[in-house]
Image (cartoon, rainbow, N blue to C red; front, side, top):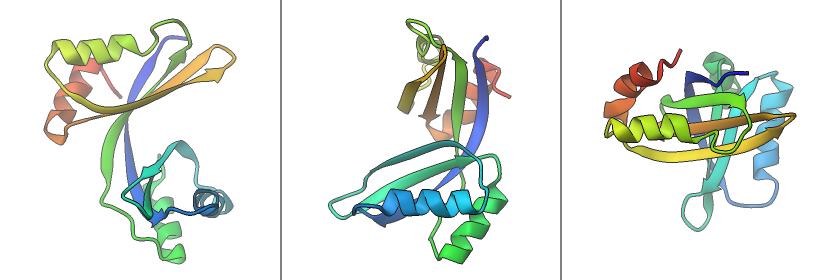
Amino acid sequence: MPNTIRKVSYAYVTAASKPGEAARILQALRDANVNLLAFSGFPQGRSKAQIDVVTDDLDALKGVARRQKWKLSRIKRAFLVQGTDQAGAAVAPLAKLGAANINVIAADAIAAGEGRFGMIFWVEVRSYNRAATLLGAA
């Protein structure tokens, strides 16, 4: 399977950094049938966590956020890569951006099993459209 790169939108929720918070958020999304393309959580200071929720159904995400009384960030953008897991699978898009002097400000990648991998990465807002064009991102 060739690698595909697509533009994705997401929002984040700031939650208490305590046991079970990520599970509670994910359960609310699951109960509302919100399909996630990616999910990332990390500390935001000593007592808070940022939970990035990447979905192709932002309206459903906003609905859950209203019902759960979550404060969502504004909508943000990233890139999602899906493809064949092989040595160096993440290199090509990152190298292409580097060669074009586009800074990747964060990236996460994972082997998904059965020969697949996925990666999400972020570039500076001012470089997003140029990066999308350069990568042929749909």
